Amino acid sequence: MQNLAKFLIFALFLTSSDLWAYVPKEGNVTAAVGPYLHQNDFQSAGSRLEVPVLGGFALIAQGDVNDRGSLDLGFFYLQKDFYRDQGSQFLAEKTDMLLVTMGYRWWLSERFSTAFAFFSSYTMGEPEVMYRTVTPGESFDTSATDITEYGLQFSLQAELWTQDQFALILDGRYSYFLTLKENEHGNDYGALIALRYLVQEKKSQNEKTP
Image (cartoon, rainbow, N blue to C red; front, side, top):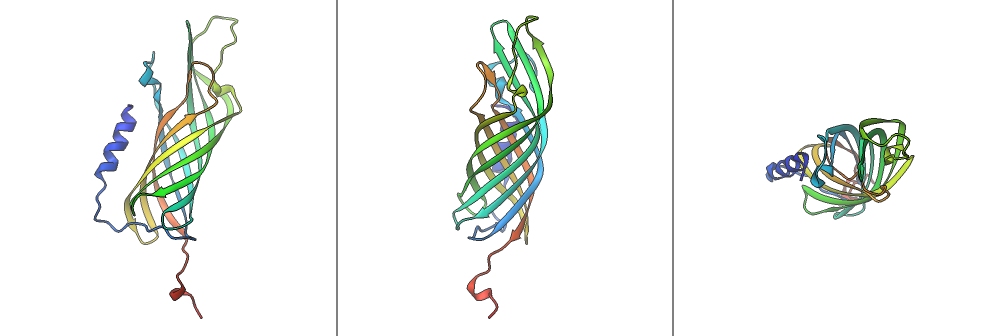
């Protein structure tokens, strides 16, 4: 497992349980924004170079369906790297990417939740070659040259701090690409530290004005 993943697991266990936490309620809408760090899991298969931790920016919108589940929509603007190894040929490329997730979040407790989502990603601009050992004249590329990719994303989220309508959350994610090329590595671990804001709160019957 990557250093980023180890740090994320350690941070989740550090969260204390004596703080007030967000209680999901049908009709509530929240938005979270913050920096996103991620690292390709190619190292787990043994790599020829140091796989960097790349950065990005994320916006997460969430709408509570009931007190146990929420719709989860995410927008991630990031740099994404791909590694492809076939025989004597090896190519590492990275590109700017917009990744959009649509999924469902289950609340395990008032402070911990997990989510499963489908995603589509869209590359922007020309890819940058990070490392290349390809025979001249050979046609060999990575998914960094593709316009669109699809996959699944898994999330484990913890609430670190809450005050009124604001909260600080730590969200660990794993992205699994379904449309990678043959012998290509693109799946990655990610961590989002974000400030969440309660945009809309559904009032109870007692709170409604006559």
